Amino acid sequence: MSDKHKLRYGPLSERSLHLCVDMQRMFAEDTDWKTPWMARVLPKVVQITEAHPDSTIFTRFIPATRPGEGEGTWKRYYERWSSMTIEQLGQDMIDLMPDLRRFVPPAEVIDKHVYSPWVETDLQERLKRRGVDTLVITGGETDVCVLATVLGAVDRGYRVIVGHDALCSSSDETHDASLEVYHSRYGMQVEAVTTDVILQHWAAAKVTA
Image (cartoon, rainbow, N blue to C red; front, side, top):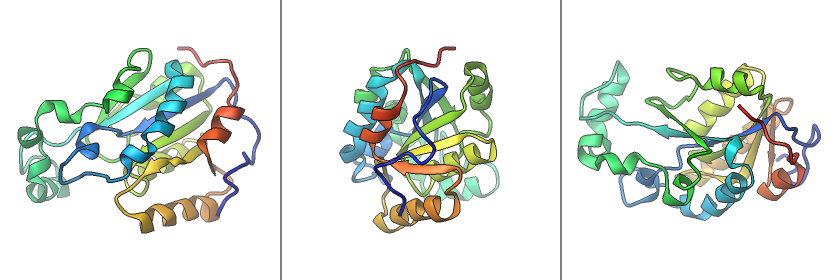
């Protein structure tokens, strides 16, 4: 496992941005997609957001409106997970957890309908406008939407810092495996460290739009 107490490539710069993945009520509350330890990592995510609210973008996963909607295998997906459609959940459940919602604005929100925030959104354009070169990634789930976010960031050449104590999953086994993959297979592009290390080494200067 990577050294969680050290940033391999030096401090974060003023061109860094916090990308928080899918910390939403529908994953935190009593639903079929509840991530049991999301509440446990929430204080760490709040710490990073509170320190850099104007350099934070939250993503939200937006499920289908009703069962059977979606293209290709997503249609089958929402037939299986009909309880997690907006029609069944209610619109309010797709919102951010209240402890994070209070930071918007200045923090921004991007909605997506698939695991990756790089598809069907203007995320890349927003980051280019800000001159971002480094992404601090937190949220859930480590082995699903966070994984898609990390790999998309790597493909686009960003330095990626994952706050390993600010990530959560429904599966301890695949959470741990994902962190090991970041270290063993993406060591040149992904650094997994603690929230305290991130906050200690993030430059005071902020990225502004």
